Image (cartoon, rainbow, N blue to C red; front, side):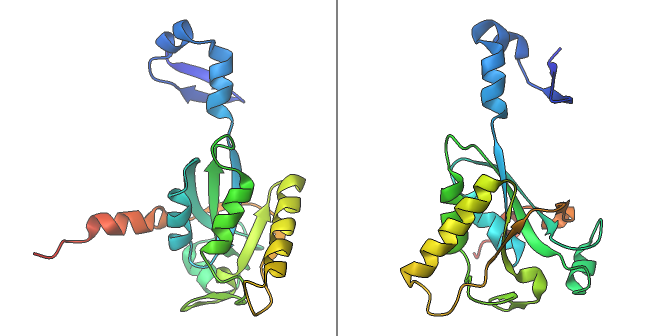
Length: 191
């Protein structure tokens, strides 16, 4: 059987019997499972997700809503400006291949952190610039990164990015997941 239990979850690993014979299985499993998460909001989550998906060491992404007052928000409810949620991207990454600091660099490079509640043509609190930290180490690194950016004078206006503790992350509807990638596949080439 190719199922194992890890942290109370059943995990399917193809060719498990071959892996067990060839490698020190507990160490291999720990290597497979050593990932971390980060959550960023930087405008419309479609483009933000696409930028993080391109980073080597990012294992997966999912778009959703966080930072609001209600459970199970929908896109329609978030766009009503009544839930307080931000459109955000949860990034799962392998810290042996990409660091949280490098993800912060990507975050700062893909949006304008000086515009309050907007990115480009998208306006509203759901488009705010926010780093949702999951632990004290992420908080310290995010604050340090923001301070370094402020002192670099890269931006003429003040940086308005919030750094706040992560709250519940609600996955967005399926059609929002990897939206940019899906649109590329649906584009018809010109003759």
